[in-house]
Every structure is written in C-alpha cells, then in structure tokens.
Length: 262
Image 1: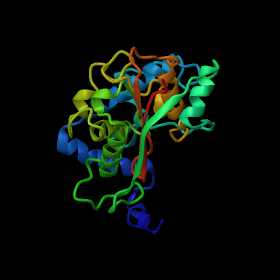
Image 2: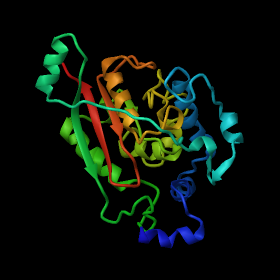
Image 3: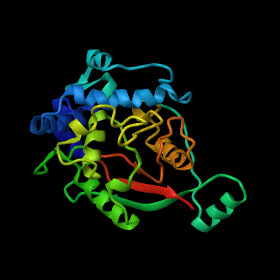
C-alpha cells in the first residue's frame, strides 16, 4: 500500500475518491454529465424494485432524486455509489458433460461458460493508475473483452444481456465501451432512453446490481447471469442466448460470457 502515500495526504482516501478522479477526466474529454450517470443508477433501481432480495426492493429512484442526493466526492453523488453489504453467494462449476447429465435428469439447468479471461495492465496500480497516458478508459478491460470474445467466438452484437460490475455508475459506462457496445466516449448516449432496462437494447444488471441489490463483490451478479441464461430472472429479457458478466475494475479484472448449455 505504499503507493497510496502519493494520494491519501491530498484527500484521495477511498475508492469513491479514486474513481472520481477518473470520472472527472472522462467527463472533461467526452462531455458526460451527472445526468448521464443518473441513467445508470435509475435503470438499476428499476430492476431492484421488482427483486424481493434487493435492499431497495419496492423503493423507486428518479433522475431528480439522484441529482438531489448529496455529494460523496464530486462528481459522484450518493446514488452513484454502491452499497456496503453483508451476504453470501455460491456457484457450483462442473464439466459441461456433468451439467448436461444433471439437466437431462430434470434438475437444475446449467449455464455454459463460453469464454473467460483475466487481465492486468503493465502500468496498472490498484485503483489509482493515474500516471497512464490516458485515465479515461480501462485498457485491462479492453484486453479482457478481446480475449473473451475470441475464446467464445462471439462479439458484442451476440450479447443479449449484461451483468456489469457497478461499484460506481461511471465504471458501467467505461465497460460498455471496452466491450464494444458503443465507441469510446459514447456510453453517455448509449445509456439513455431506457436502453439498459429489461426491454432495452442491452438489459443490464437485471437484479439491481451492486448499486441497488447488494454489494457482494460481484458474486451476486454471477448468480444473476445464470438466472438470465435459465430464464428465471425476475426481470427476464426476451432473448437470453448469451450473457456477459464482468468483475471489478481498477484492479486486475476479468469477465466471462455465459451461454445456453444445450
């Protein structure tokens, strides 16, 4: 943690403050605003509203409420930040052959891991990679996306829904760009008009995400990805052949694409 001595004396004490630094630069370069971040938070809350397991079950959120919430560290407001949660999740991973046998016996339907990758940048620090030539995108997530798509033999146009690690609203936007759903700097437009909602172009964080269901380090997102493949999500989109699930950003990161077991 010695590298934090470069930041903490100047007030960058928390993940929120570190992400705020990236977000300020991203906003400066691409014209993103707090209203754009609100689109991400409101969409997640719509999904949590229908989820009895979510902390914010039955509690709506409007753009106006988002904009009126207190600053945590500019440009991040309260509802741009995930919760602090206690909880647990579990997954059982078996061979595809075993999963098909289980499924054939009428037991739990499986989700096939079509592609998975992990990456770290050579100039990456733990959430404080401020000395890169650019701090307005995630090169390690770019690499994860490239490798995962190659392994799966798929591309962004094949992904029907996404569970995107949402510790903060802006990190969702950067990942949408890394995974090729929109161009660099275009996420502010991609998230508008309900595009992340259940019936939108890319249903995203259908459980409510870490912003509105619970923050369990993304493991609850893995479970929701499986539910989406099974067709059992409480906010089930019409198409569910392939689902993207991503992991934490700013640290060595990872992602995977789940598909139908067949």
